[in-house]
Length: 294
Image 1 (tube, helix red, strand yellow):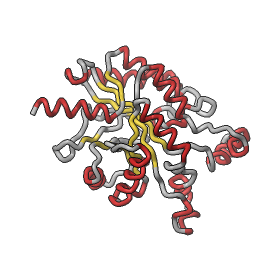
Image 2 (cartoon, rainbow, N blue to C red):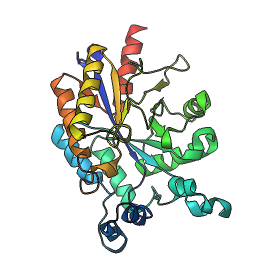
Image 3 (cartoon, rainbow, N blue to C red):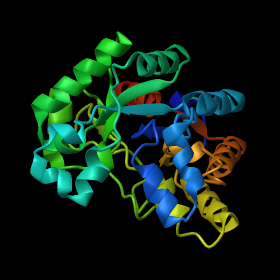
């Protein structure tokens, strides 16, 4: 890092993909898979285990950090052709979605923006090569916020090569954070942002998604050691490290340990002298550095 980051040792960008805010079709799936009927409570009670806006905001506020929240505007399954209703992957991609213009969602998103968090675009799965759809989704979210969006991430990290980034740049986005994996983690030699067009458009490689680490870890302590190893690697290489924690994983009843791991990651990064914040703020700092050196 440079003095643009106040002489910090490295950068840690915190991000959250808002895929689902209500537990719907997942409830019977988990009830059968885990032989635990308690998963069905969310269908008949007021419990909302995936609605974690206030909980994550409170945690990050206590830690003195802010993050990026990428909001999805996915077509519902009923908007697809009837032939797709029978495909299991269609249920994963399109069922149980939310409307970002729903008043309760609008209130949550505006609360994020007022509190200093970044709200960005979580481009729908099919929008990766659909500029018109991307532009529509960006416009809807900007109408909700009342201000421009500067970046985002594609749903399921879905990229169609450089074409997706060309679409992003054409509709006015300044950065994308989709380049990475949901099954592997690490830097793979990428310690800085990418500039695919050698201009102001930036790509933040995804270093760590929680789902790539925790489910396959033999223990939470082992998972923490991997997080610590990545922080040490970031420190050694003055890296820009980007992590993704989906909000629903902050529900400790269903996903024990995920919240603790996230909190521990932030506390350790702070102790190591990292700059910590949203991708959008990091982008601004990188641009100031680039302009100052040109």
